[in-house]
Image 1: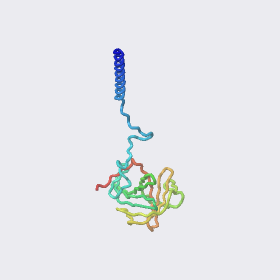
Image 2: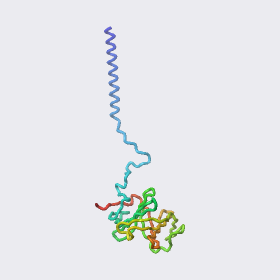
Image 3: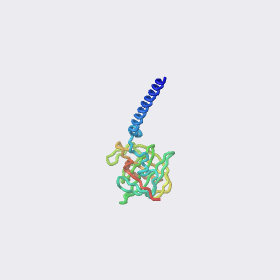
Image 4: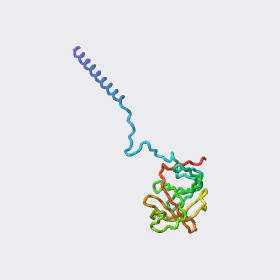
Length: 208
């Protein structure tokens, strides 16, 4: 009987030893595993910043006194127009550079953010209305037209509030053309526009 007990004790001892070895091997293997990196969604850039406006400034908040750097040239915001037509709204900012050149910068969400740099076209002999307009060898096709209300702040050369008629055109290569007539002037001003990608401009807000 004593011999049987001794055999059982010996067997249990061997089993405990084996279990100890197994546990030790599992623990060692786990310690060798490298921590896994968080998964990256397919087709996304892990270095892309979600809120790029936090780095380059938010064009939606532009106001007089801010500086906009466009393709290496610094422009100061002199004044702003806030326009609305029904439930649709956008802004246009009068900007100038150190050499005294002036331009307009429009900011619109339709629904994606679109920022366009506009330069006045002088001595235009054509006006809005036709389905197609040709200027300097480029053909523009009618896009949209209407009448909007505006309020002015800062220096814009316009009344504090009023209305503006507009007629926008677009060429096949993406170049833009716009005609605008403010108030009851009856005359049209033309401007060429080029859409800016986010990397082409940076905003420096006026110090508070």
